[in-house]
Length: 328
Image (cartoon, rainbow, N blue to C red; front, side):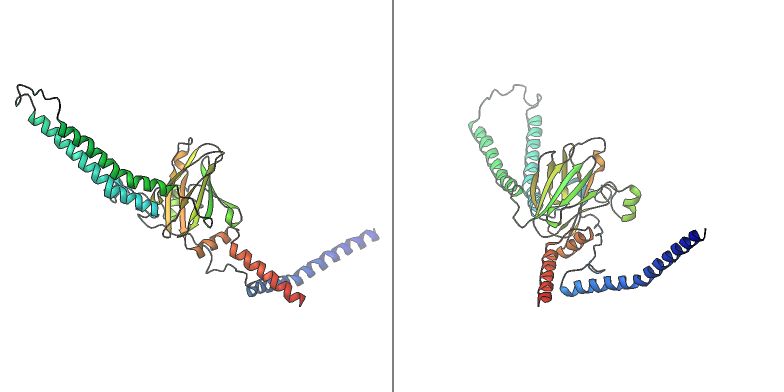
């Protein structure tokens, strides 16, 4: 019994000693961590402070999103404003070439139809004309349509070629993967991390000041003003990655990797949706693209645990300098 009491007291003494040592060493550990952080900062390795941390950008009303008929009846019937070079070219072609040609032809055909109805009605022509040919008219209605088609074909082929332009080698790569029914965004150039994006509920969207069924919990964040290599694929069925205000739409096919060049001209929040019928919740897998200045984009990458190439180089240089100092 006495031996047992001795062991119990010894055990209690060991526990008390361990607790005292833990309390005594805790402040020293904190000081050591702060010292290490200071040494890293002095060595030139970028650190994320409160000023450089990522903050989600608030959307701009009417920018990168559809317009309701109640807000602007005319704008709700046409294309969204465009924020990429291809989109602006396509919108120019639609407004300056296609719409005028379509309008003129439609009004001309309507005028001809009304003229024929009035001029050649039975009351005005009890004896119908037996004319079967008119060489001048036949030449005109052959040559004029050819000229119209050539006028339309030149900018159309140019737009088609622009949309198949190959991304440059230094383009930032983002891989968008379609799932049933959400999106995943992978960043191969920044440490291969992936962001999973799901639609917000109506309450969450209202709280964040974003349009319901377009707002997501994790956006596809990209740098603005630099070439992007957007790749699409799918994990299950065919999806389509589409953002109307960026003039971007590309199928996401299982087992295939499609890619396309995209350059977003200015920072902003741009909304899109899956545009390929992909199952029961097809209407509930929206896309939100947030374009940021490069510095803010890199801050976002760090907040997600990714690797910024400049940080890796700076860290390597700092380690090399430290090794040289130690050797000397």
